[in-house]
Image 1 (cartoon, rainbow, N blue to C red):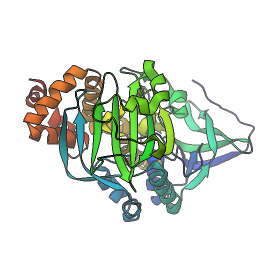
Image 2 (tube, rainbow, N blue to C red):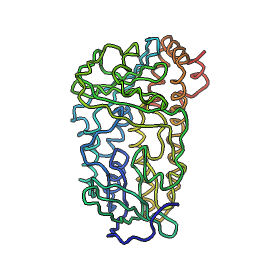
Image 3 (cartoon, rainbow, N blue to C red):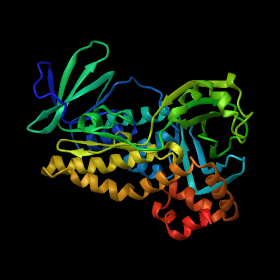
Image 4 (cartoon, rainbow, N blue to C red):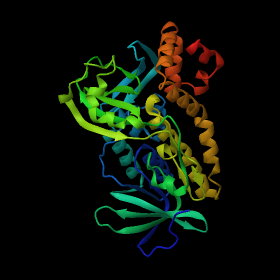
Length: 398
């Protein structure tokens, strides 16, 4: 087990150190700080910073934002986001079907959204430090007792000791790797995302276009800008170098873009389908993508981060107040996300079989109520188990 047990560097002590100021980390820090916990929130980047992401908040994310505070929800609503009312899935032939939410979801750039949450955490009393890269964990008596981090500007290494360390540092989490094995499972994919203005025929729905192989996601994020994501097998990652040429290979996407109207460069992320063997250990836990991330097709990353932060904060507050184990957090995550994990895995595998997607889209066109049900399940409007019944699964393929 890698770690640092004795440091000669300057040492500071906190109740909680949260590593990563994205949605999972900032939401966790916000809730802890509001409860009176001494929280240090660290991020290697400086804000505002961009992230390759679908930038879509599923409808149930709105409820979590409201629980984080009306100030947070109002700030998101005032940030000129797009409002999505459903999702469209397009098969390789170009045939598409639309499923509708019961309400709407927000979609906005991560530069705005992440900054809103980070600022809310700071306003609640969390100390935020940017440009700080966590390198190691500190161990005392076999338990995590803090982190060792380096200031990017000064190069100084400091030890930040804490009763609890929260790893919210994303897909390539340093905290997760230091806690133990991080597992990769198929299908292995990477994503390339850009912001493009003036994309033709983009309205109030997100779009997922499945190809042979890979897929393209489109989603308005406000101000006439669309997030465009190209997701391909890891073995074909070089396709991302021909971003707009690759987009034109998809029948429902070809000709809708002007490359000269790209307003944010292409960013890459992946490979996906990773999960940590140890999301909870003595003195530490993982939340958001640091704990697990399977595939971006359903766009569940932000909701999982926000809801996971609620579960993490509840377990941490109990631990700090009573000395209770953090293991209830692992059980709460399984109860909350097990159905979603299964549904996301099934969809992630299915989009790698173009013939199957053609069949499913054809069935959904004949049974639009199933399209609505599936979109609402992936959008967290209804429990995932509602889409996993034998009757529903048979209706998708038979």
